[in-house]
Length: 225
Image (cartoon, rainbow, N blue to C red; front, side, top):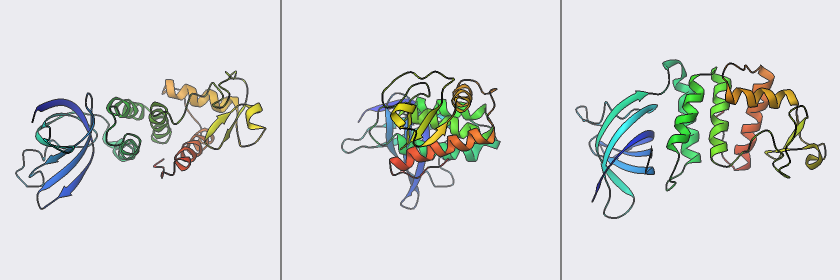
C-alpha cells in the first residue's frame, strides 16, 4: 500500500460506525477519491480540526490493497476559499461539484477551485450563477454564449438568440421558439463571467437562473441555483 500526498477540497463526509468518517474528496492530481478517516469523530482526533469544507487541504493517505477506499493518515487545513458571508453559497457549489464530478473522474479540483474564486468576487446571486455556469462549461454541459450550440455558427453579439431544451440556438435553428435571449442578455452575462465589475440586473440573473435550472432538469438532476 503506497502513500500519497496532494492538495484537496472536501466534498462531503459521511459518518461511519461510532467514530469514523467516509470522505469524498477532489484532489489536484489524483481526481476524486474516497478515504476512510478512522476515529475522526472522536473529540481528540487529530483529523477534527483539519477536515473543513471550503478550505484547501493538504492530505496524506494510504492507497488500498483492494477496492477504491484509501485510509487518511494526515490532514492540514490550509487556505480558506470564501469569506464567512459566502459560506452558504459555497456549500451549494460543493453540492453541485459532487454531482458534476463523480467518483472515478480525473479532474474536478481545479474546476471547483476556480468556481469558488468567481463566487468570492461577485454578489451572491450573480456569483452562484457565474460559478455554476463555469463548472457546467468545464463539464461539457454548456458552451459559450457566442455560438449556436446546434449549428456552431458564430452569432454577432448585437443579435438575439433563443434558449430551447437547455440549449442556446440561433434564430434559424430555434425556428423562433423558446425563451428569447437578447443581445443585452448575452453581453451582460458573458461580461460578468470575465469581469466582476460588470453588474447584472435582476432580469439578467433571473434569466441565467432559468437557463441553469433547465440544464440540470435536462440531465434529471436537481439544481442548487
